[in-house]
Image (cartoon, rainbow, N blue to C red; front, top):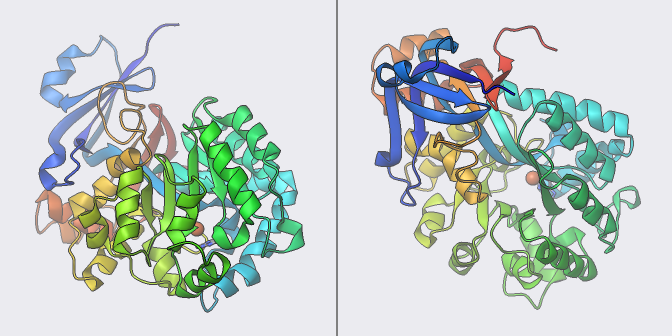
Length: 435
Ligand code: GUN
Ligand code: FE
């Protein structure tokens, strides 16, 4: 087939691979052109320089006054919890019992799974999120639902079947038998843009036998992802201490069973100590910081400076349905405030880094998604820095990049996402009829 080149004119923002996360690691092109060929980035640069390189007749979308950046990456979210977002409970453990388990039970019906996955992915796209690491339920059909719905939209999505075989209702209990997970890996991992994530819910809901089997599975499939929760809540930490008295720390439970390695993503990490943070850096595992969830459930305040000092990779997760927003902009907003309460300062440029290239690096997907290097998959969003009357008024006071991005993070939400593209194809446009 014939190759297709298309281009997008806007201000361009993306990041280089700078492990120091410093502000000078970004590229900002005021009058930029993003050139896409066959769903991949061909070039990102000055409009004036690149326009003459386009083949005759190549379409150029005019987004002047807008900002194009890589699609957001949400490294921790539960798609089956979409329908129970904003359910009140005094903390994590009662919230799980009261709402989460009954809600997840409904996914024994594959039709419910597919309908929820369709809504969920469209909601991500409305919020500018093009890739996520997604928890499904214990039901293998919930994984098929997620990956079928994401293939229909040509999205790069990670996800997997929850593993839990104790301390949960009988209707959600599985076992140490990994055949379902293995079959799902064989069916989905690397098929199109699907990425499998081995998903033990958290240490308290797995027997030692299940953790052993999970570690063996993770070793047999070293390029799959692993995702779980760790050190989210103090009651949970005390419980893990009782269940695994022989382990030095909660995180060390996972390390003991072979679950710390590159592509392992640990949600929350609030109550880790310095040894834990150092193990995170040494093993190549990564942290998903979920501020809206942590504030909502009263779990605690993540210590970003401590993670940075240890060199542990950090990205951002919404953690819907304990998280209160699908918006990575609103997640940045609350991450900023949590950092302030912990005495550190999170610049807007770094927030955008964390939600794009920082997440891609944490997931070992650099070069595939997260920035506009040539050959990267063309997943990007069009941000409107004047999306609301208040933003328009606010940004009129200054054109400095840091201030514009800061106002977008603090005041923006789905309204600031003018359009979302996956593999160069528009998958969301603000104001367009749904469907
Ligand atoms: N810990 C174990 N399961 C869950 C969950 O579904 N959500 C959150 N936030 N924490 C958990
Ligand atoms: Fe979670």
